[in-house]
Length: 462
Image (cartoon, rainbow, N blue to C red; front, top):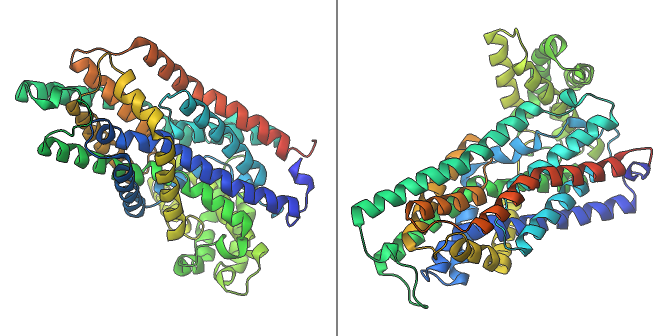
């Protein structure tokens, strides 16, 4: 449908602007769910009022985003095939952006409305898989070739294992606290509006700070790559290539020459595109496209060529029969050829953190109340909140620096449930069933929604 419009037409520009606001709205709903987990314990135990709690969380999210880099952001982006990221005709990737944001935003808002802690990570990953699968159908490719299942499995493994670890470790830590401390305000639900004793209040603020920082290093990155795709579509001359990657840009031709024989021998069913992209870079080099006078089309084309090569190098690294030396070469080439196209300006990171904070401020109450009052058969105690957030901060922070996206919601929710079981209060079966069903249906619902939308919007037959 949208492929019938000229890339520079008004309708495409309007759709890109809409996409920009959609991705910001999605990041705000990420705040509804994920960042609300970070502030739930301090707000619910009266350790901090909502406004200072959200400000603290927002600041630490921002610091986490800056320190954590962008590995997680582009681990998600790499699920998409290069022809979706950078269409061969030079058109902006509007169908992909609309499909992703509409599907993920719909499910995030729906689950928030019913007060169900849901994973924004699952939402966006499901939407990415749907787009990749739909593109394979449009291109008449087998799903095994058109969808990067290895990358998806790698991402889903982290998402599946992390809540189990949260449940076991948080429950174990809370059980250990009960053995060591035995009694006191750690194990008593909040009374009225009175804050806990000073040392307990400090502990809860500290764990909130840690989870917020860890969230920034992981979840805070997830929309950064999507924001970048949107602004690249709006202003390719400015943002298609990293202005600070001059050295890597100048070496693109030389690195493409090294990559060419590897792609020819070990590439997938689209190796011809990778070969053409490598030959184009060898012929023209990359430095010229970084110059101020380079056209938007030139810069966008170079970006597309680099992504084609990066995608083929990933397949090369996974090919059977590849020697250790060639595998190391492919891995090195991916590292040195990625920076010209995989980056994020500081203002994009700031914008992402601001949307998270604003979303938390507007919509935190529903999720906070579920975690504090409706998950266990008794209200959450400060010790339970501290245990869940301490374990959550460690797990999320570790995953952030390894480039594996995990769900803050899944880890914290599972951690609180683990402490409820360890404390003997038990959990509310009805609420757990609702949460479990939401988690179970997140991937298939977002996959179908985004896949159908993308097929309609990007299929020339419509």
